[in-house]
Image (cartoon, rainbow, N blue to C red; front, top):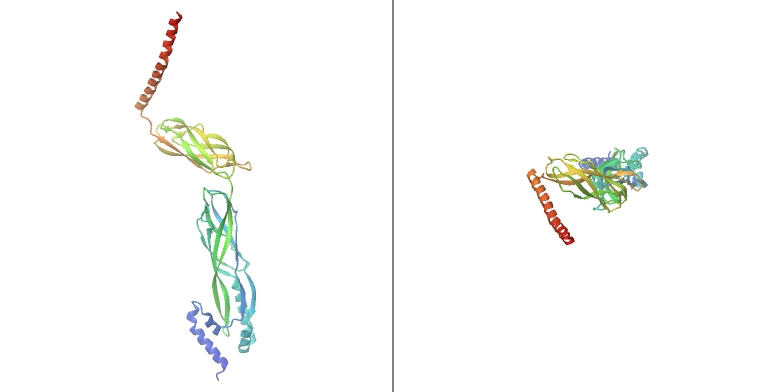
Length: 361
């Protein structure tokens, strides 16, 4: 004997078989409503919060890793029972089976606050910010509510050498999926899920600290192989703080030697430049080219602590050695010139002296 209950079961079976292919790609919600029971409407969603899990203060020229932690504090804000659906299934399948499916659905619906397949992209808010994000996109897995990342996301960054001190905003764009709803198919107990994609934008801040910062502005040198001369190096404080008791230092290698490798500059205020002089000896066999001499400035910061600048490069041009014959010629020219000058100056003096003696007679 065919009853209405058997007809409905047969209809459900046919619909299930017809939807097997659709299930792999996501079953249409209207189709599922014909074969499944949605006992509850649960309200809520994931909500992610990001914060730095590292020091947020960085220096100019620094290469570092920005560690970003993320927590899901999403909440279920409420739920509503579909009483008609429940009463119909109790009448058809019995209260024990229906209540069991209701409990299973409510349990699966609690995943509405879980964020799955999280992808985070970090960028600078101001395109002119002196910050380079070397790796800007990371996959972070899933986060259920009340949980945070097992280990912070690591974004390698670089602070430009010419960065201005201040606070900079970084934008974290996060995308993820979450389970929006579920439904059960009595009497078989199969569960169907619906997902949706969500996006969030969060912000973190980093600080580039105020400090003294030095550059080499200019180098005055007239050197040839074999020379022993003095060079003048101009340093400038391009930072934001005064540098006290500055001492400029150089570190020379072949073909240079020196017994004068440091110069006292005194206090240098932001924007102020000062000259340092160093006595240099160039090897006789030095190749004519531009050399780079290592330099640094030792100073005291605003907290009276000794600091050292980043390594500075002093460019020095070395010309070819003057051939010995030309040196002799040059020296002879100098001597002749001096004698000529002495002759011009000395003759009138001698004549004046003789004239004076004659007058005295």
